Image (cartoon, rainbow, N blue to C red):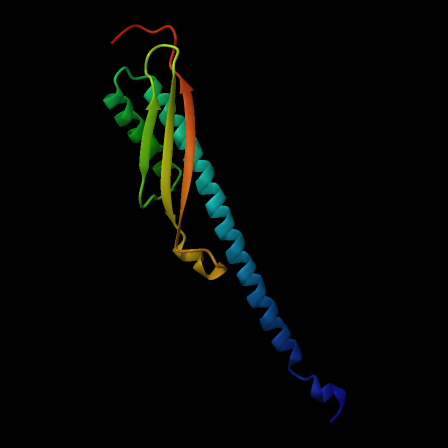
Length: 137
C-alpha cells in the first residue's frame, strides 16, 4: 500500500474537524456577544430608570416610573428578561441622589452548544441627581 493510498480520505476528515471547530467557535462568539450586549442594555436601562425616578416626587411613583422606563427600554432593545427586578434607593428631596438597580435573567438556550448555561443573570446600576431647583409636590 503506497502512501497516497493510505492517506486517501484524510482531507475529508480534516475538513469535518475544521468545520465542527469553526461552528463551536462561532456559537461561543455569538453567546459572548449576547451576554455582553445584554449587560450593556441593562446598564443603559438602569440609567434611564434612575433619570425617571429622579423626576418624581414620591417614592411609590418613582418606583413605578423607574420600572416602566426600564421594561420599556429593555423591550425596545430586544432584551427578553425572564425575571426582571427593579429597585430604587435614595432620597427624592432636591439635590439628593437616586440609585436604580436592575437585575435581568437572559435566556441563552440557543447558544447552549458553545458551553453557556441555559440562562444568565445580568445586572445594571444607574445613579441620578435630583434637580436641586424644583418645586415641592
